[in-house]
Length: 222
Image 1 (cartoon, rainbow, N blue to C red):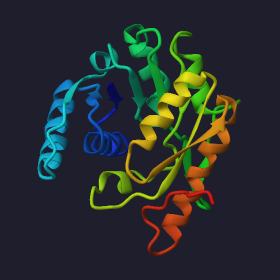
Image 2: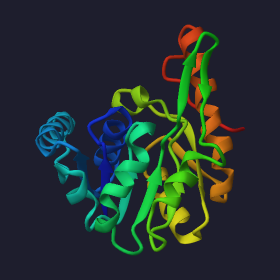
Image 3: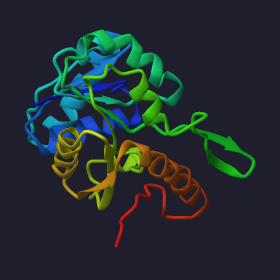
Image 4: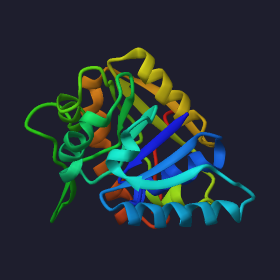
């Protein structure tokens, strides 16, 4: 399977790229608005993994090229670029490709980080509104700490809540999440439930900031 990470040079994109390349045999495509930057980062990721005895298929290209032909596209870009990135690659997305949103809009205030959703619903739903109808959108990975993902010496123990309206696409993302060692993937219901999942992230960030030893905080439901 080919997994493309648009904005794969950023924190969450790096973490997911490294973990899938470490724990699976899927081919990984790192995307960026700057193809040269994507290629450089892909080489760095490959070097990190070679040190662990892995020789993954990992390449770096522009976002449009990354989206074209991928089975799964992860929108690992900052919230302010999410919709414009989808619009820029929409004509490169093939019917049946699954688009995954780990995006969480947040504001930093005097009282800490606060959830800052669109006027209605969640950012995952706003992304779905900008995505071709034949490309299902799934919400996942919003509550994972990027640092915990990127640190390959860190043993993950976390849950990923997966939401979406297309059962097949949601099952696929759950399977991909569970392939990362230490991740348990849970069905969180339809895409309309994604706002609840997204809103947990500012709480986790605030807890990490205000408590020692919680820098790479995640969630585990018992």
